[in-house]
Image (cartoon, rainbow, N blue to C red):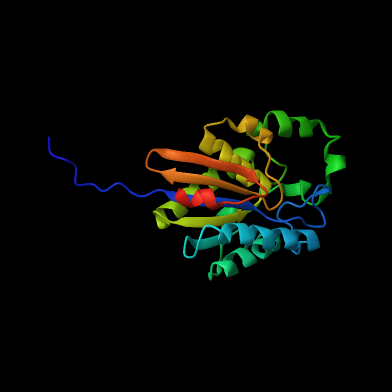
Length: 218
């Protein structure tokens, strides 16, 4: 039998970074609110994330993408600078559109009956005037698929938000969306997924400290 002339595509390493802490983190549901910037702690977190990613080596990261919101772009800035790159804005990495829940306090939302649906049956929930979790997950999966095709055999950074990253990790794991709330994605944590022809491989999730040098081998 003749050997196929088709050359296997090298896998693409995708580093998923949640933005750093803002003044509303843990208190409000900011959604896609404009004008929300990193706080001092978030800025320091972003600098630490940049140093950790730089450990992968010169030229390893070839592109840095970020959601268009200020808090993600500010997180991406030191990461891109450390690699001699510019931040590329990508709407596919945007936060979940929470519609009329935008800006509401979490302690008030937690009193709503619909909050239980968000936690236990997210695949069946749509935010009033906004996006559904299923639509958000489909958007992220499509976005990452396009970026992987654009950067074969390379390492790229995608700075996004907690729910989009959790939904993407759940999809890569083959985990149902109704279980994605069990995945922890802390501010400025780094999750790494290797996308190859045989499907995605999870290398790390919610990494908030230590060296990333072992990912270089990927």
